[in-house]
Length: 266
Image (cartoon, rainbow, N blue to C red; front, top):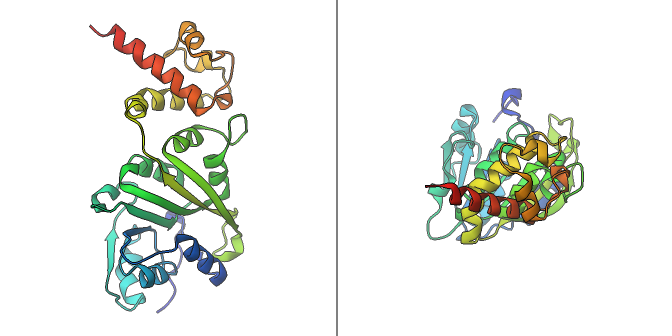
């Protein structure tokens, strides 16, 4: 079957390096009985070996042409369920039953960050995620406070997941080669406490607002949400910038903000 021509509008870069493919499959370690979901199977270079080991696989593919020929390309195997859909709108939690799903994929660079946020919102249904991402995105995911890569994605991902940067992948492993390096990351959702769940609306608002103006001090970027008394009660310097705050400091601000908002309600 002829190779599919990669489409720029879908951010398609197809993995070709057999050693890299084998290394990714080994990291996934698919086993019978596991419910695995692959995002963006493309031409199926990961799909085939994963399906052979797991016996069942759901795939979510946006490209209608690729979705239409994937089963034929792989020899019409049993256990392959193809969902022609936009992963950004797909309800992954609907696939989970008694066993949480595992999600894997070579994520398109142009949607990787919003897609990760979409998946974090469904983390209760997911046991683990293993993704190939632009190396810069992995940098941001695992970044520590006080570093230039630290931001909204770092804070929220650390709330939901333990993360492990596995290995890097060079552009030459793809066709066409992207203009950036890639990396493999494993993200393992951790259970949120009831307190964390209650904090989510306030925490997301504070983190989004503060990093939306990351060059400004917290006093300036959060002036519509938090006053100096709240900063003082939280033990946070209002003259600091958001990239210096840890997850726990953001959670403390959110907790006090939530208490104050609740106390003002009639």
